[in-house]
Length: 360
Image 1 (cartoon, rainbow, N blue to C red):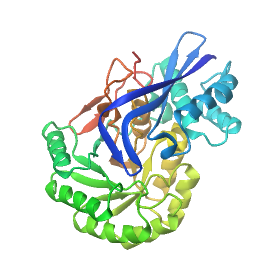
Image 2 (image 1 turned 90 degrees about the vertical axis):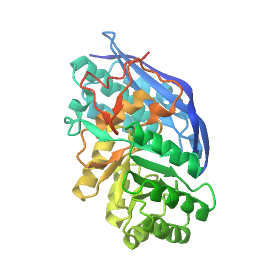
Image 3 (image 1 turned 180 degrees about the vertical axis):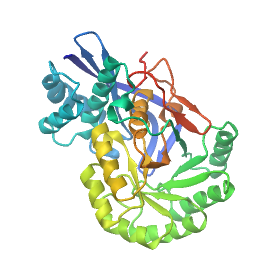
Image 4 (image 1 turned 120 degrees about the vertical axis):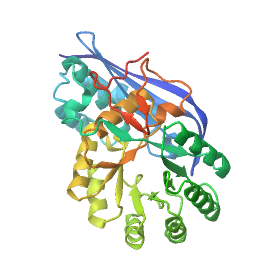
């Protein structure tokens, strides 16, 4: 089994509604879709998604495509992809950083090998321990009444009962009032958590988290800038509400430092931030050894990337806080013929071969 060719294709897909974050509004999602072909005609697909491009992190779809086409793809040609861990290590030697690019290629290689072996991708990562994961939904309009109506519809349709609020883009007191009103409305019927996307300084975070905790908000995600692990540690020690690290966590080394400093109560796992499925498994192993639970994050992936995330998270017993793999539901179009199964408040693992994301 040898790799014959690799493609990296740029795709833009509009969202069904505005997705508001602390650093800007998202109306269109940008993707790099990777297709790896072997000599027998099989194809594996992967994906790198960015939210806001360099406004959120160092990589953009254009840099991801360039790294794959110029530095990763040519060196992978002719290689046997089946020793997946070894290939991942080689890519880490060829390219430093650029984790989104490497993650997209790793997903495609995982899909290709699993399809060739006629097994689910999760089986190549040790096997699934979850057949379903509780599925969160982001309420991100910024309008309290509109978000409550949207949440009520999700509950009535048995789609979601975990609601994540994007805050940090307005005055802190207004954001807190918005979140507290929604938490009070759904008290006892749904879990409400907030994502600040690094928007507060430590003093603002102290003031705001106190109010959010009193209102019954269950989890606070990344309230301060990613490099301020010292502030994250003080906040985690000061409050009972769970504090989650997202932007502060990229590599397994970051996870080790967060554990060492006790800078979070929960870790948000994302394949692209980590550099691929294997680095995500390593990060989760650190969390599990430390007794720290994990949450399955997302970058608003299409079904292609969502399937890769799902197969990875399904193998991790540390993922006990659910996941937010709702990306396909926020997009006006998708890239597959068979959607993933999302119902009864959860996303469900499909037992078919590969990532089971059959491209159009």
